[in-house]
Length: 107
Image 1 (tube, rainbow, N blue to C red):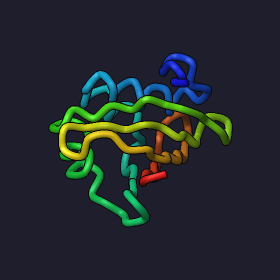
Image 2: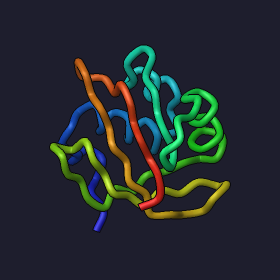
Image 3: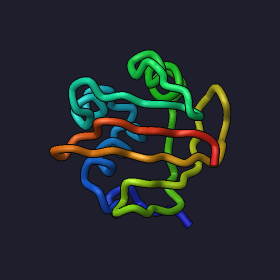
Image 4: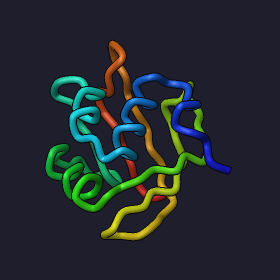
């Protein structure tokens, strides 16, 4: 069962997921705090480079299956044109209504 993006509990996470699914780079950037960081499978990555390659250039899409930690932890089916579809975990740190860090990886 998929959770609709507009039903996600945390407003900052909801904004980020909606931006990813819409392919909206501007909305994605505005959901992030200045200096936001991220990791993929436990390795810190360059946020701009990674998101361009893994999300925007490859048409990434998140189908959220479950959420926990007040909406700041998601399990989702993530797909893009590069890797196809995989089960992923996403963890978000939020401050002042903006994402300051996210961590993703295979679930």
